[in-house]
Length: 99
Length: 409
Image (cartoon, rainbow over all chains, first blue to last red; front, side, top):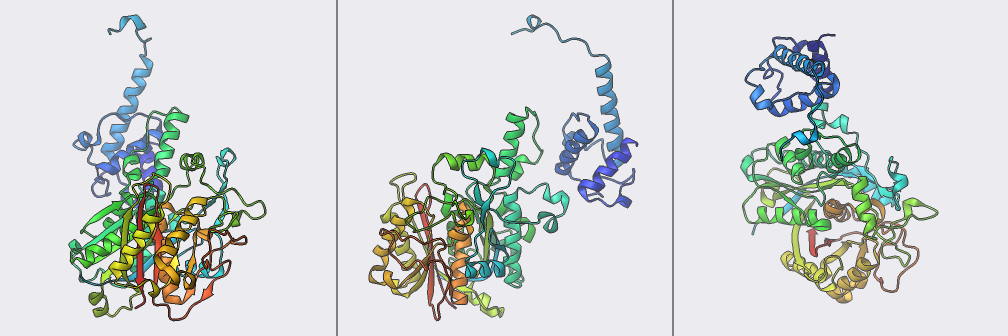
């Protein structure tokens, strides 16, 4: 299942958004997702998809206007997290940090 | 000053949801006190409480429900019933002259409790995004205002166990003074969380469970009373200026004609005869009523040793010889102590007594206490014809005593 499908499923199940409305081109505005609702959706996505969503919804609203944008952003975050995990290096020794 | 009438009532309570169910339970003397069934129950010393049953998903769509602490759910359901019962109370009213005053002691305590559990118990580092909005004490009144487009004064009163009596009294003053036309006023409380129950347990004021019948554990005015039983729920009334209500053809439930507010300033918990008596006198004075006009007092009657004896003495002091003719009952014996919502729920009980000519009983009063020597309507409701007025007492930790008086219309 694609990220878009998973998000659409979540929005339908937990946010009572009718499946017909959940098209990739549907704007968040048309789905009545305001910035407060978006915070909650991120929270649910974090639980459901096991990713950590950085950034503040207020800032992200500029680049996320449609459901497709949201899915693409989550994919980007997930891939970024994957890269970080793959490149993980041991943290610096305690003594290396400055006071 | 303009006259204020009650045109609608709404109830979600441990003894029934909706005014009709609440009335039937009061009349039958039915108890809503039961043993709690929660994962944390085994860790409680006192395992009884008066729980309300609310099928929240049938009242709210899922996305909205996730923004509502239980206290707001209870408040919204009670407010909706009150407004429905009041007919078109908001029709033709400037929304800026329609307000909401709610009393609550604890606010969204389930959200706070759950948040702390996740942080401290589970070691989880993030809380639900709406935690602040759900837990804030003014959430319930804000949601009622939002839901019904009421843009006038929206305030939350928190004076512990008198919170909602204060909210109703203050709302009436806004209408009487011409600052508002319609007010939804009342209280909501949802304190049956592990943290809150433990805090109350520590205060040593909770009733011990009756060995034979847990439902009979709250015994106001009885010699064997052992404390209060916590309850949850909400009650709301719609208040309107009398002429306006009559002009739109509704029959008011009653006139809210008296409100007395007096502070003890003597002790943070210990009740005071002087403070309670003063609140009752002030309520009678604002109602321009003689004590003998009151037929029924819905007592604060918590079931604690201290309150019931002090309240009895205060009633005797205010009512003098008439105290012996007065019907006094504590409906907390059935619905428990709803803290911030208690004043509103018991005001509704007093209004129903007045309208229906039915005095609700004090249940579980088998062993009289010599210090409590009034007519408490023990163990069975009573018919009473032609009652002119009723009083509802609400006293509180912190010492804010609030008394409401209603006159039959």
